[in-house]
Structure formats: C-alpha cells, structure tokens
Length: 135
Image 1 (tube, helix red, strand yellow):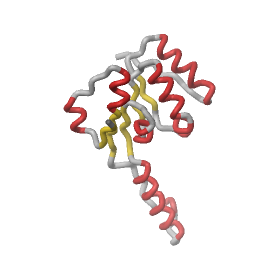
Image 2 (tube, helix red, strand yellow):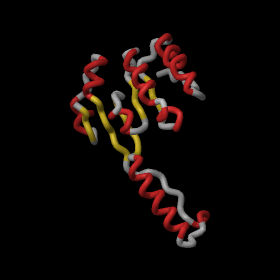
Image 3 (tube, one colour):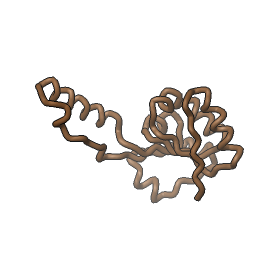
C-alpha cells in the first residue's frame, strides 16, 4: 500500500486535491475530521462520489450527508464530556488537575445508497459490525 498525503489548508484546495487524487488513480481516500473538512463536507462528499472514489470519513455526519463510510467517535458524547469538564471548572476545579480523556466509543456508519451508486458491494460481515447502516 502506498500512502499519498495531500494537504488541504483552505477551501480552495479541496477541488484540486481531489482532482490530483483521481489523476493518480487512488483506490480510496480517508478524510479526517477537522473544522475545514467539516465546514466543506458536502462539497468533499460530492466531489469524491462524482469521481467514484471510495472514501472513509472521521464522523458519522459525513455518512448521513452521503459519504460512503464513517468511523470515529460520536460528537455528542464528546460534547457531554466537555460539559462535565466545564461544570467541574466552574465549581473551582483547576483545569490542570483534571485528567485528559480520549474517546472510548467509536461507531461505524455505512451508507449503502452511496455504495450502490459507486458500484461497490459491502461485505455482509462488515455490515453486521456496523453501528448504523443507511439504506
């Protein structure tokens, strides 16, 4: 497997990056959850699907918007934990004394409509492991 990292620093970089990925005939794409990619998720999804590029995203919202597969932590769980930390700080806890937490629950969401549009068959074993399947 050969990895081809492509940096996208601004919205104007998205279309050229996906064009470059298609030009090298990449087999798949991974889009990490970041404020830039989340703010431009619909255009990223549309371009990836237009180029028939199987893509995995870092948040379930991408799959809900038409992305093929999403695997990552639930944003709502992270927000609940953040609220807990804010409450502790407002009740005089020192931020430096609070433990650092990482997500412990990750979810797999598969969009079968997108898979069908891309001409892909998702293995039944993967579908069985998914937390959510969009049909």
